[in-house]
Image (tube, rainbow, N blue to C red; front, side, top):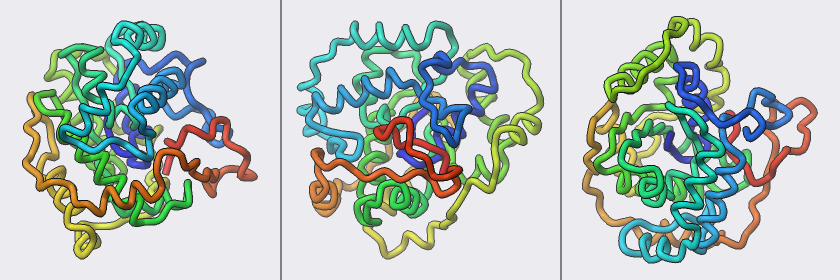
Length: 297
């Protein structure tokens, strides 16, 4: 499962898990006091991804740029593929599995090398203004910074998913009609040869797991006009790619504008972002883990 933070990857992973693929062991799942069912994210792999980014001199909020600079940073990774496989296999002991951590979106070349060529991805795309609003409420970052981060993440997803079986999907579609989203995802996975057990109807699963009320802001493409041109270009490229493909063809994009790096550099890798529990958290208790930022939004 790939997608920028705050893009609905938790909800998407929960639905895919309902189709049969296993998530991490219950004891390893990141949980919060306002979401006892968990975020369908492995604590062990989240910390490993943080370590990989640190070895690159990066963080989840300060990811590397694409192109040659990316691979120069990736060359600094000291964790070996064998070490990463051991951690992964401790967490995912059965197949098929589904793994969600937004950090993987900026570490995809490493994990493609570790896990081999049979990987497939569901890419969840959310309007960048909705992501920016959610990041502002959760971490207090500016809209300009959040939009730059969204663009950087999604440029890396587009560049590094090339050749993989990929289903690009909209978060808005998942929320609007989760049953249809689930059926489309089942068709994609079964088309790749994945054997999925018989399950309850898509409508029943969707009604049980997805609450449309969790979508706290809604924007359209029109709202993106007049913002950074690169953000709109990446968004349009992903919109054009919505749907399944056996081998993703990365669209050609103009190089990232300098102001993206300027925004990210203004925060930098050493800044510790603020963290605020969601407003619907009972009593707004402290988070179980302040380095995990992927909660329902």
